[in-house]
Length: 197
Image (cartoon, rainbow, N blue to C red; front, top):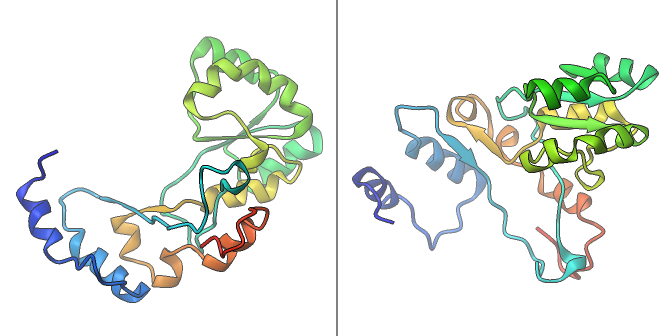
């Protein structure tokens, strides 16, 4: 794919043979992010694993100290005390069976992530054809099927390895990059003998 003139000029400022330390990398990102719109900034991490091996695949999420600057709307399927816990934790939408027709018949998708308590998966399962193709189906491996709904909501509202230029400019290095030690702890079940990150 042919790159534009602006892209070509910016790449000249990056030394691909240099392993930038975090401070240098952040300073460079800020310098290069000069588009007229609010650009997305991604963090890519090289893993010390063989992704072809089933027991070395890594899935999960890490929490950035100050989030990403993007508001994430959370829908929680829960009842009774867990529903109240979800509301107190800041979930935008909380409910149970009554949400099924709203999603299926009214085509309601005013949310970004779905969390469910294990006892509600029988209900949520009926939405598989609706939520699955959109990547919204709760999953235990992603931490979105859990009894600890409060913690799940907290992590969702702060996690991601992407951020926005305007938010990125307002934060220090510690608030912009994922904690590598935390990443290693979350991947401790991987069979790789090397450090994952």
